[in-house]
Length: 602
Image (tube, rainbow, N blue to C red; front, side):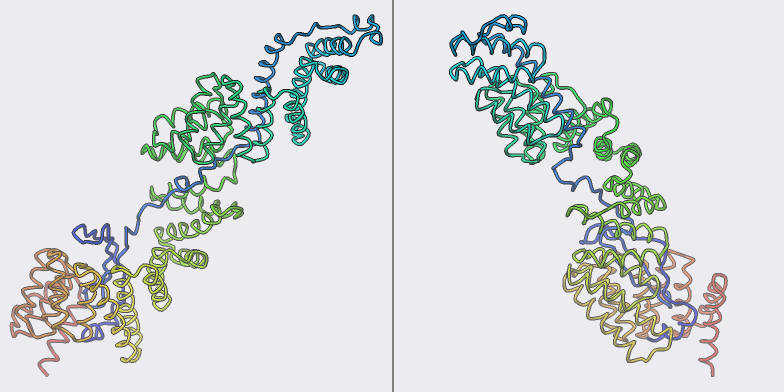
């Protein structure tokens, strides 16, 4: 490894803190991280996007089945019941029944009446009780009326109404099966009883039997198109099935009909969010919150909407409010972590992802995936903070659960490399390449093998072992270049490795092509100079390092190699002058030049 081997005692691989974005390269948005070798040349690691690429929120991937809370469902039941009773009361006037008070009924000798006459009297008594909201007595009187005369249509209509009311009462009391039995009987007596269909729709809705609920609601609307109270729950069902246009139709109709409540506005907000009509989504969600500030989902989706509107700080406030309402709201904690991360608030991000992990019970496939991603994102946050041990611990957990994310393996490998754990780093880069066998993956794999060679050289490992790593590096980098011949980062790394293998001519070719792609890239310029120097092209080497110094006059390695090139070209006076410049920046390197000069004289 020529001079790299000689200088290993002073410099090991160190990660430089600056980043170059190569917008001219064919692979988009690469984040190139130069890593200095022990001789001042640089190999590079490539983040596919950016080492600080923004994380993705969960809300955009959340299922279209939005959760309805129990309180929201109960509120809908109350609303449907109230509206149905108002409709039923209006319809009573259509029944040809003369009300009979209990006092009047007591004066009637009912046994002397024909069944038809008695049926009408009992129906009149039932109607009286119904008007006075005494359903228990009304149902007994109506049942007797129907029993006496099965052809008493008005009695059947009245009994259907009472059964509907009793079903409503049972539904409000969460006695769902009892409620359904009453609705079934009501519909048998009157198949045009829209309120009974609406009630039975509520029963199915409460039971998460969406198709059955839709059928009942649609039947109710076919009988009474103005039945506003079922339009919102019907629109919600369509939303949950992802039929946004139909959902919009019914939710909007409900609002036009005066059904302005927190739940209806909430789902209007979700519809507008799905449609990308973010300003309208914000308006609806804020209206929902003004009517009911306790819906954590409304705050969550308002946060998501504000994010899309570019108002990240306001979005974070809404996510925080979600977690205050429900401290176990995992998606909100996750998106808080993402939001903080994207603002480079890494401590806050770490705390939020920890909460997302703590409260995640993996009950659904979505939450299971979120649990896994929380570890990956937590690891990224620790990496950005510089806490490499915690980053490694969390990448380890994440990769034990996520097996299909090449970028995750790449990031894990990078952090392991920062701790000089090159063998497990290489294992992760291999996994990344197997998942995504492209130029970037193989460039990073080659880079890691090269760093392993340098590391082994630092600890005086056998030359055969070091050369084996260099050959593996060459193989991977040749593969990278074969996949993308215009990938400057891979060409640079290949040139560096070929230089260390002593294949200087091939190194010069690779580096020349990298230089053609990016003529102002200092790592390439420096490594070309090294290739010239090792081939004995001292004049060309000197000119190359002067180009480096034109770009960066205090580049100590450029000065070092310029001095060496001048010395080997017999220009001792120039070499001494350049050595003086090296001494101002790095006395130790100047002393190494002195050792070189003295050795040549003996």
